[in-house]
Image (cartoon, rainbow, N blue to C red; front, top):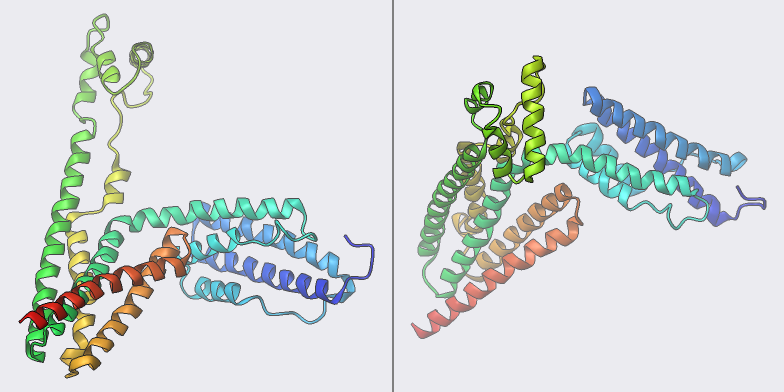
Length: 359
């Protein structure tokens, strides 16, 4: 609380905080409407917490509340996404919004409010992590496929165009790169994911081995060797084996003696076919963009510049998406993607010029 009359600057700041808190509470309520069970309850609790922060600013403002202000642009964008999407992207944005809270440095916010915002960030991070895990397999293949298609085919098209060959040759080369690259990416993802699944399967405890535990010689205690082979100390393995046998004698179910299949790891990896299809389609869609100017009849420097601009916009978009989902700075991720893509294309273009000159 302040004992003196608030200044105009304070009133503006408090009113802005009030508008943002109201908007953030609405965001959590909107997201809660699209979810069920524990996630819905957690989001509603977050909305209630933002309501407590709203009340703090209302108390400070007192009779100076004034007309309702609009929340800042970031919060309005978050609200739009919450109303129309309600997806992991919105949670990722909410995570960043909580991380950028100004309450740590605002003298008029309480330490409890600043602590609340830090805890809210962790709550939202945990909620977003579930969606990220579900996307990790096919989404990884899709993002890598699109970026590989954009960068590799832009580099191919620009490198070939720099040699001075005809427009038809450039177009044929670009389309060949699209088809060959998409097939290669799809096949590679299929083999990669299936190999990973096979490794997981090989590391999963056997379903039939668990049924043999009841027939083991308690004195010889072969079960102890299983636990020692998994990294337990001799004493811990002996204690664990004794616990299992005690449960068997008493008729209590206890935990599965040899462990359960790690199905959540299989789900995170996804399936080979799904990853292959995603990689094929997204590589092809990315690789098509550098070819578009040549498909529409552009030639020479005009086609080169148009191709580079289109790919640049696409790289910025994919970089921002990756940044949002990872919880990192979207603009930084976008610029990183752009610099990498343009760097590769520049090298091949210069090599094309060199070969064209030598030819």
